Amino acid sequence: MDIIKEKADLAAKFKTTFIKWVLISVLIGAAGGTAGLFFYSCLNKVTSVRVENEFILWFLPLGGLLIIALYKLFKIESKGTDCVLQSIYTDGKVPAALAPVIFVSTVITHLLGGSAGREGAALQMGGSIGSEIGKLLRLDTNDMQLAVMCGMSAVFSAVFGTPLTAAFFAIEVSSVGLMYYTGLIPCIVASYVAYGISTAFGAQPVKFILSIIPDVSLLNMVKAGVLAVLCAGLSIVFCLTMRETGKILKRLFKNAYIRAAVGGAVIVALTLICGTYDYNGAGMDVIKRAISGKAVAFAFILKIIFTAVTIGSGYKGGEIVPTFFAGATFGCIAGEILGLDAGFSAAVGMIATFCGVVNCPVASILLGIEVFGGQGTGFFALACVISYMLSGYCSLYSAQRFAFSKLKTKALSFNANG
Image 1 (cartoon, helix red, strand yellow):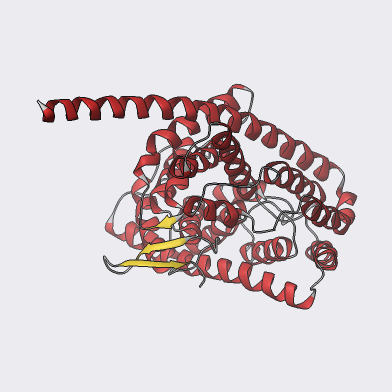
Image 2 (cartoon, helix red, strand yellow):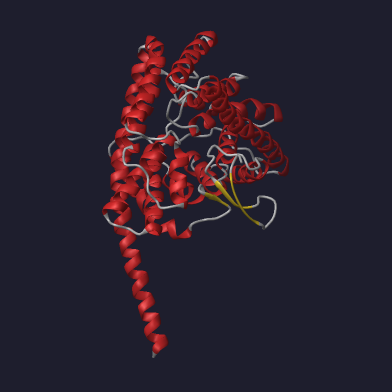
């Protein structure tokens, strides 16, 4: 009788927990979806304004001063996404002011022509929203950590339109080698609620159509594998350049205001030297061109430089879309040399490089499926696992923790870039 009672109590507990997290996830998803939709709309608007008024780039140094002032006013440390990842290991608490401050700062960066993405802001906004809702509901520490992951999933999904990628990215990214399966229900529900809200009000998911898909042959797989090896190297270069540029700028310009102004001036100068605005903002148009089979040979190098200077000098946004840019343009050129279709190679390069910099193979494979409609999934999967292994212990996020070795079934415990 005791065993029967224990099983009944356990079943009741599972049902109660399930209902609790569905309700919490819907709430966080609705809040994150609404915030993400507004953020998406603002970025599209300011990007249009910048494209139509090229002179606005000259105000970038002034925008950098404003961003630094905002962070100092609200007394927020500029740890970026690392702040959110650290909260998953600790108490699940993210500063409430982080969401509005990163929102405004990213909009300023995009409006004035800084080279940055949007996922960093999405993850930070989502983490802050999830944390605040968790506080309101008086969740315990473990549940607060799940609430943060829910928020990350929701806003990422709303901004990119990739709900499965968003959910699994939040579950995978904090501890490499571990999957927080307790976060599956919360993150997937929050992600799809946010996705539904954003798409219902006009947000366009990131999707591309591949005109040519190579046959799944041994030769083509080998070619894709070689491209993945090269993309793993590119991901290491990307991460090291981002990290070292930030260190150098901080060492040269200890005053944050001077650092931002100088960084902004450097971006203006680089833009004039290059004679194009392709490397300002996120660069989605260049990614589209690469996937259609057209790319400038050294575009990936220039984008890495532009992004490293922008983020390293204090501007806000994210590094994932610039990673897409670098991977797609590099893949377009390298793949054609290897004998693959240039557009398809750009797609493989984009996914493989993303995997290399974030160390999230499952989320990366899902990204390939959601963005490219399931076309060429076998190639994406192969490229992701190769890039994941060969990218070593580098990461865009210094707070990302490696819980297991990439080389053997051995537990580890150290942060990336350490």
